[in-house]
Amino acid sequence: MLPLAERLRPRTLDDYMGQQHLVGPGGALRRVWENRYLPSLILWGPPGVGKTTLARLLAEGLERPFHALSAVNAGVKDVRETLEQAKRGRFFSQPSPILFIDEIHRFSKSQQDSLLGAVEQGVVTLIGATTENPSFEVIPALLSRCQVYVLEPLGVEDLTRIVHHAVQADEVLSKRRFDLRELDALFRFSGGDARKLLNALELVAGASTGETVTVDNETVQAVISQNMAAYDKHGEMHYDIASAFIKSLRGSDPQGAVYWLARMIEGGEDPLFIARRMVILASEDIGLANPNALLLAMQCFEATRAVGLPEARIILSQGAIYLATSPKSNSAYMAIEEALDLVRKTGDRPVPLHLRNAPTKLMKQLDYGKGYRYGHDFQGNFTPQQYLPDGLADSVFYRPANNPQEQAIKERLDKWWKT
Image (cartoon, rainbow, N blue to C red):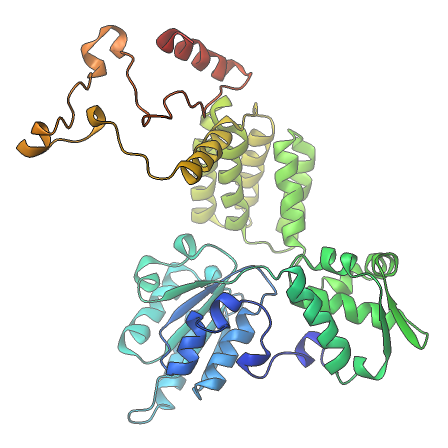
């Protein structure tokens, strides 16, 4: 028998749960459905939010032939054969068939290049699904020919609807009585992933031998803990393991960092997924305490891209150990967060006149740039002046952290600004 998630896969767009900003009234993909015009597109979102289902529904609703490939196990040859099949199956003025590529971020540049001509010529309409930022993972030439739609993690309301729908509409579960006392544990295990939610619900139902299936936090916790392999059989816990990896780096524990790194590598995780998160951590959690960390993390990313596994495991290990043993500071992260918060609260304050550009005579007559002091004309290449908008001149965003590198920065700032 098919898994519960497959049995409950929506058959029409109206049955689709979640992503109302896309499929609800006035949503971008709802308009595609209604106007029967489908551009090539990329669906970007976390696992289990319905990317594959949405692609199939669009194809069925628009009555287009549907060809599907997974980037995990498809090569250039598979792509070319599928494109030839799509070309042969198209007649006269029929709309182009849909080529759906799951996890398109795992395609190499050459594999993505092989799609370009077919997309440009309208041989196929491409729908790519990815959990990674397409700006980094999809080549610019292909990305420029696609609309990007962002799918959001499912919220509590959506997950609740899915659970109630499952116990009422599924051919198997509907034959049993359910006592839905508590859903918190189900939601916690699912992490906004509908497939994980339904896997967990099916396990709980299967473990119950009584007439009534009781769903409460204690029961869910016990059942999932005993059946973790079945619950996570598609390896969707990689975000939890990635979280443990990042927190080990942030917590300056090289032993934990290397252990979780090994778990990810052994589990088949994309090495660039790992390296990319190390780049983010180098700036967010180490920052100015050791500016070289970002340089090394970027070198680690590029070396991993160039070398690939298995050799990249050594590069990733070196990078992880370096980041874990570096001094930590989140001052740059906190500075931009505080600045963004102030910008959202205060709006578009005007740029002070002395900081404005004055390329024309009229602008000079209006005092653009008047009074600006060029720092290099002064002793020590510095002179104090106001760089923030009026009314915000006393705002402070960057506060040097207590580490040797930033204490030296603090001394310079104190000397310059007499703080």
